[in-house]
Image (cartoon, rainbow, N blue to C red; front, side):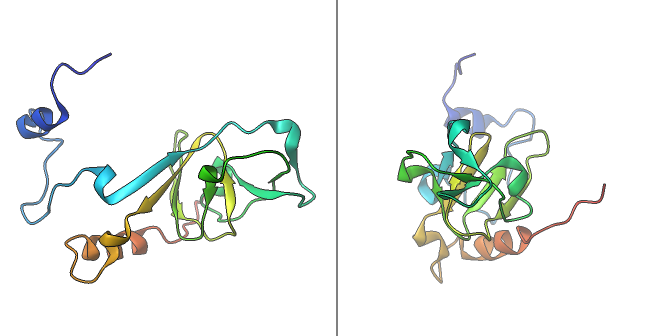
Length: 144
């Protein structure tokens, strides 16, 4: 499926109202305020539970903020998640949380979002939103 109009045109038309925003909010492109990195399909033959190598962040680890799986194989530094990065499990629940664990590799099915430093500066139009976002991503517990 391909878009037949530009994203800017679709947002401006907002035919169903789903793309609306509060009049006091600035509309910015995600790429101008954050970077988003999808996870990588690391080879499972390098997985272990003995703590060898680098922690591996999987979908099930997003909410709990820790992992029991390590990866002892080749990897690209682009897939390393840092503490306080926003991680999202891209399964049916789309859970998200600020990563509270040590640097870890981002496995397939997860995404990592990092705000541009300018978004967090005092006086930035994004600063109040960033503060709210960080409060909303505190660890949550799900009842079963």
